[in-house]
Length: 289
Image (cartoon, rainbow, N blue to C red):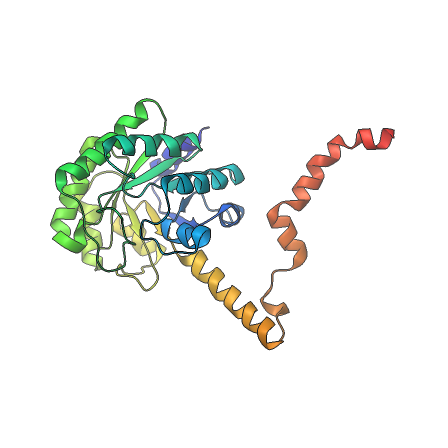
């Protein structure tokens, strides 16, 4: 089954799909190893990981697609790519969507922020006008004529224009053919419920620990009506915290073993054992000599 079809099958089930977000091939691989059904390549986390810079539109299209390619190559479950604003006009959006499809992504997110975009839970966000926003999603949907991929349509209009405008935009995105709707940064449980009650199809919640959207339990999110709960920074925040503690231990010459993954498990998760098992089938030539 193709990755887009795997994602379609997941979305047909009546349940909440918890989606830890990755930032590179190793983090995506670990998400898959722990039994999660899908992941999202967080633009925030990927920008921090790849170029050591904030998610403020600094990574280029080519860098983002390359990061997505590495993630898809290392895994065998649906990956949603972060296509930001599409990197230009409607024709750029078409190229962006096709690019993500061809590296193996099951879906790509296209949003209505002004370029360069900002993280959805940081100040200063602005969105483009309705017509430009709708053209982006129409172009993204049109790109599926040649490349099979789902479209995750995001609006950040809540911050600048209120929840009503955000819902209106998302409803139009669905009418244009978007597969998954994402209204970013509702501020209350009531707003989250309104999003799910008034919009058709699968909806995604974006849970940033310490962000503007309430950090609800999985059961609460499912009951409200979300199909996907994305956790864009959980793994990066955990990794950075762990690395900081390990660096402090090295600097201060204190015990660091309790905070480290066992070396045997580390090698196994990276894939050494699988490599050795597979490569053993090709060692006949060595024995012949």
